[in-house]
Length: 247
Image (cartoon, rainbow, N blue to C red):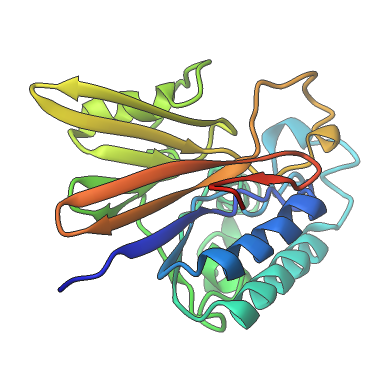
């Protein structure tokens, strides 16, 4: 008899703007939930220095990017200390800033393998697989960050962007990028589609570029066996408190 496969989908940390309390709660949840697979949904790193709106500012010249990368790889080390299962990560639009910056501002360096995100973040060392823009999750379900940069707009409603992509792909979608945590279902052509957005692990007080954002912290879990799929969002408060099945 086949068993249920458990997948934990998260890690939109946005280092260095991550929330340490949420991250510590995430590690505790990882131990408690014991997933078979861990999917990083993208934007584990924020990479503010090469962002286009920071060009010409002190942020561009702050020389903090290596420090931020070291912080994130240290977090991968934490995760691997307690979890030895399958681990894959999507590239987010924030990590993509590094490659875009090299191509536009330092094209002589753009072809360097060392600047590829998987090499910068030592994926091979930590046994991490770099996932494609849209990756299979289970039968009829996929994960993505932002369709590899092809997403042009987002919904103001949590889950709204994901269900829109689900209609477009004809498959249920679990995605990051929006910073929202939500789950919307629709029946299209007699078939049920799910759209899930996995929230974030940011400290919203550090997001000084926006006031009172409509963002929700947390992550998602998906369990599947054969044709059966059960998905839930996990609400997490900024103080790290988790709301999930009495946890």
